[in-house]
Every structure is written in structure tokens, then in C-alpha cells.
Image (cartoon, rainbow, N blue to C red; front, side):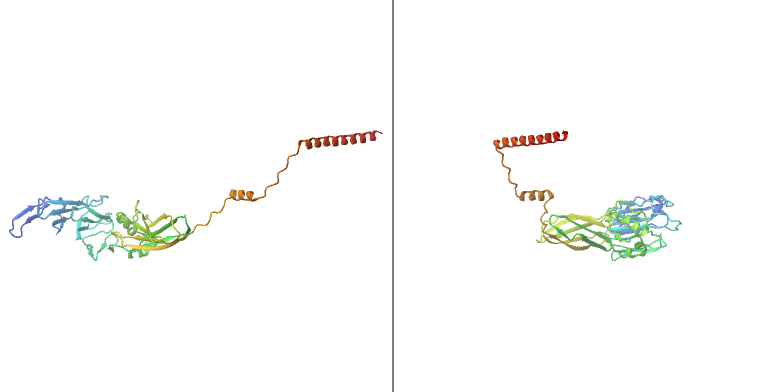
Length: 359
């Protein structure tokens, strides 16, 4: 299969023995040790020491696609890619891990485990440093949609698949007056068996949040391998259904944050009892879960009058004072004359008293 230390493949007719095609040579490192091959989905797949996965069309021998498992740390000893081995193929996907012959310590960081689309080679997911494969430690297997594998970084066996989720929804003020809003909030948590480990419970005292598929690889490294908490983690989407007293439905979709918490403010329109159902419809990583809560809306009380309104009302209810009649002009003149006479009398008395004291 090799010429000038370059891996090639030849295709022959099983009916006539006729030579049909010869592939392009692969990278020279694939000559060493063992290169793995698999034939499925009308393709020949090949992977080896060069850290490149090749796919060839079985009819023509043309190279359909390649995928390179690069080593971002450049710690692997004899190349820039991680030595690749196909661990199994199922459901239109190739699952590939790292391989090695004679490991060194400390082991290079970030050995990848990844999943490729078998048709076009596109990356479905990749986790660097989560499950390190090897020749001596065995490779991953799959059954009942669960992957089981040893990780040769920590010598533990892991099971990988869909996990259980738990959704809790609540409303703090469960009876509000008409015209007020209610705050619907809750959490979506990962309750897979692995989260019951004492080391996880000590680190995640409030539980492990469920996160979106796009964040899963880095999130699992953070949760199970104590990598730094990744930035820009997105939570899962939660669908809210609200049933009002008339039997009408209202809905909203919200996204939980990286702590698994979601919330939504909503204003009810009529008096009565409301039922709120929050649904996490599941994902490629979690099974679905849901929860229900209720709240009530009372008729709003009559608005209390303001201080100014109370004052105005009080004044308006007080009896009116009688009007002071006008004094006729002739009476006004008489009053003035009387005042002048009285002043004259007082002056006269004062003068008389002064004279007596002089005598």
C-alpha cells in the first residue's frame, strides 16, 4: 500500500479484478505504525499518525474531504496534528480520538475527541482534553446511544450521552392587583448522574446549569476537568405558556443565562386565576423537562384621593360665612363725628387733670 513511504489506496473490481483507481498519496507520517481504515457510506475513510482524516469516494477513488486535528499548543512531539484513530462510525458520523504508541509524562495537553459528518467532513463537535484515547488504554465504544471510554489523563471511565434536565418555574407575588405585572422566573439545571459526584457538589453547591449545545464542549471541560470557566456561555431556551381565566393562551420564549436562570415580565389583562407552564424542549445534550405554577389577579382597589383632593372637598363642604352688609354713607359721616367728639372729650380731661396738679 505504500510507495516511496507514502500511503496510497488502490481500487479493484471484485468481479473482474480490473484496476479501477489509485488515490493520491497521504501525508508521509501515515506510513509509520498503523493507519486505520473503514469502508462505509460509499466511502473509504483513513486516519493515522499524520493526524489527518481522509475520505475517498469508493467509485472513483477521488478524495472527498479531509479534516486535520491540529494541536494548538504545539506540544505533540512529531507533528502539528494529533495522531488520529477512528474509534467508531455510526448514524452518519465518524468519531475520532487521539492515539499514541509510547506516552511521555507530562502528557501533551488537549488531546482531542471529535465527531465529524461522514458525508462532508464538517466538524459536529470537538473537545480538547476531555477524553484522551490511546493504544494501550483501549478506545471508546458506543451502545444505546451512550459512549463509554477511558480518559488516559485521569484514568477514569466516562459515559457520554444525553443527560437529564430539571426545570423549576416560580412567581414570587402569586396574587397581584389588576394593572400590575408579574415576574415569571426559574432555573434549568443539569441533573445527570455525573453531577452527583461529591467533587462537583462541592464546586456547584446550587447545581450545574444546563447550557446550549454550542457551549457544551468547553462547558464539560470546565465542569468535569476543572478548566477555566468559559466566557460567553449561552443557556438553553425555555418556552413559556400562560393560560388565562377565559381559556386563552399567551406564549413567550426566553433564554436562560450561564447560571441556568431565566425570567420574563408579563402583565395580565383580566381578573382571575392564571396557569404558567415553562417547557425546556430538550436538545442534543439534554432530555426535556417542564414545570407549572399559578398566580391570581384581583380587582384593583379604588384609588385613594390625594391630599389636595381631600383639602378641596373639605373646603367645598364648609358652610359659607354671611356677607357683611355695606354701611350707608350717612351712617359713615355720623360715625366720624362721634369719633371726633370722643377724642375731644379725652383731650379735655387730660388738660383738666394737668391744671389741677399745677395748683
